[in-house]
Length: 436
Ligand SMILES: *Cc1c(COP(=O)(O)O)cnc(C)c1O
Image 1 (cartoon, helix red, strand yellow):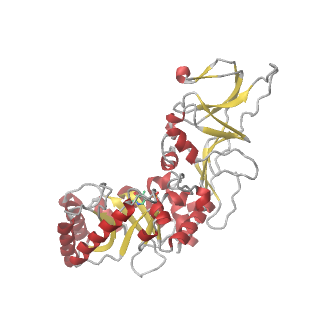
Image 2 (tube, helix red, strand yellow):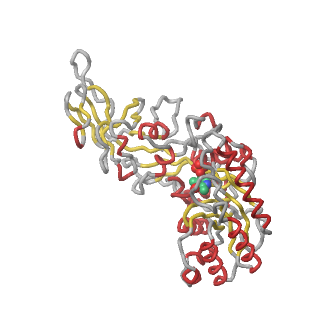
Image 3 (cartoon, protein in one colour):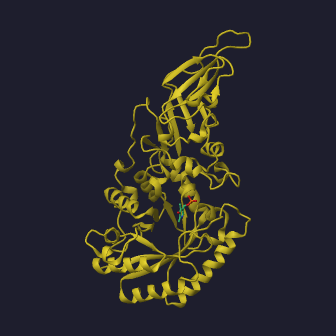
């Protein structure tokens, strides 16, 4: 079955009661973003769905990305890749085996468990599970190659490998001085039939700085590595270097494949370079929570642990059942922006483990007359989402949250806790966005 014919269950519209906090994930926005990035890139693209698809939910995002044209899916950890393979099997997505099929997407994972060769060859070895799951794997070191070869021999099939080289980030990947020996060992393993070297790849450290010159240096080191690899008699067909920032801002590194993460979710790799809107992307996650209590407090009354914020006047405040255990950064204390209807307000006092208080405005006017509460229990507080200009609803962005918390939009959406239900709207490629 092709991805587009996947059963609806993989992208089911779940609708928890509106009385709980939830992340509404707009799959139509994800599909739109995928198509947009593909159009810019002009080469095949990988949907990066690590970390539960940056907090958006692995299964629905993977299936949506495939229907939007992704030919690859990428995750960091082997355990994530095995989970992904099961989800794809359940959704009826073909595997890249047997009959060669252009429809069958590939899955790449790039962090392997540390394992000696005898352990790697054992019946219950995760590396053998990886081979059985038809995964593409990354290799950076000789010990990894030894473990992979042992697993491949035991499993009776060649491991499909992407050789990762360090081109200046000094994170993973073979360093230039380690590369000749690794390439020679890979060549021997190819001759032995235990591995297939299909890819040569790396990752950019400063792609979000269009003018730093860093990306050109990465590219130069990549090209040097490629010469070493080809001189060893290896012929990796899939060369890839770019994540979203490289894809958008460094056309020269798009090569044979781009790995799109943050852009797929509608967020910019760096909003100071270009915002989502400027890039034609639509933020896919909307985090909302009902006010579970609304109360009046007196001028001078302190709010939450430590009493770090006190009401400047008699005040209406609302209680939101989300806290740092749900991924709301404690750094957002008295800072995180929140929309309640058309009111743009913020968290006041410290973010607690499970709850936070939002300011709803003054409870008295200048004459001292009482003002009614501007919001009621059950009204929805929106912490972040796609700003909607049309109906004048106040919607802060993940970018604004990142700014006030001293972090990046990636962290804001990815750290959203497992306790927050994800609710999917907008069927893949066709659905309308309708607010639940
Ligand atoms: C996370 C990751 C990506 C995706 O990066 P974005 O900036 O989110 O597009 C691509 N490649 C690797 C190796 C990654 O770890």
